[in-house]
Image (cartoon, protein in one colour):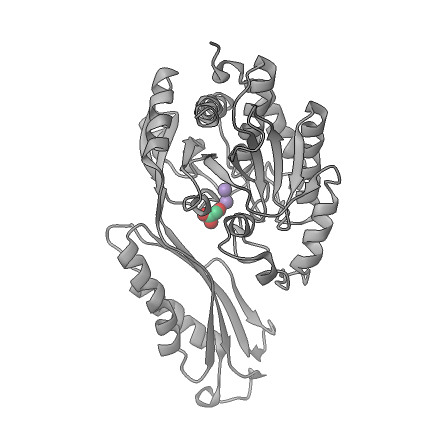
Length: 413
Ligand code: GLV
Ligand code: MN
Ligand code: MN
């Protein structure tokens, strides 16, 4: 019997990446295609066009998650899902997320080309707003699909440009008019997501595939420090309620708390804004974000709790509000899925190893729903969330070949 992997078309997979790369291209090799923008909608519409040209069914849910379905012989059986996201960071690359969507779609096309049927339906999915840089929180789409949150909780969220999620969702859904509307959260029997590693380990080890064992704990917060605006030339230092100065004290204390000689803690302040932003006005408000991650559940939970306490303790004369955007405990993937990825890579002579994920992924939200796993492939020098992000066409195809055989096994179980 022919293997689904034999029908993976490396050139087609690469060409599809280059086609999607046009939407939001920065002219410096990277892309700015943040969630639910016009560019995100155009990328989705392009995928939808490829899907309908193939005769696949298309669905969209209330969170604008988009599903391309190849039906199985058991029409009502729970589906096997595979996918990732098409949204990017403001200065993002052409592979983070995109690869997961396009490799899943490539598997559907490969199965079609080879005339291979399956029992369960297989769906390639585009999750909405994985990155979370325009609208918080990230993984909005998979959170809604998983039932962890309702979309209603997020509809009034605003982007830094003043846009409201409710409007952007409606506009994005309207950009794939061929997709039938369906409720979020259909029954799922398995999920595998492919992704570039976004770190240097596979490349350094000279390996092509990572059988991902799980994802570390991740959290994000927005801190709002409130002081009082005043004249930079006149207000005595002792009388000031300088929001910048208090924010700096918090930031210093947070860096001290998260210092780690073993280099396991991941702590990032990615946005820091002072208002009104005038050189000669004392800042009356500072807003900054915190992204904190760790693989150990107990340490993760304890530090998440400490973050708010540290901000309060260092507020000085200012007020402070710490808004939790997202807290996700570490998650382990399913042993049978990890083992099948390792075994299939071996059968295809693709060198592989087990590894944990430092980055967050929609797969984490699927863990409570069904047997879940991920396949990593290398990216050049481990660079990601950067316009220089790059992956090798042969590695992308190798990961898609492992995905094809793994999905087909799941779909016939
Ligand atoms: C997703 O890109 C993450 O922040 O891990
Ligand atoms: Mn990603
Ligand atoms: Mn990302």
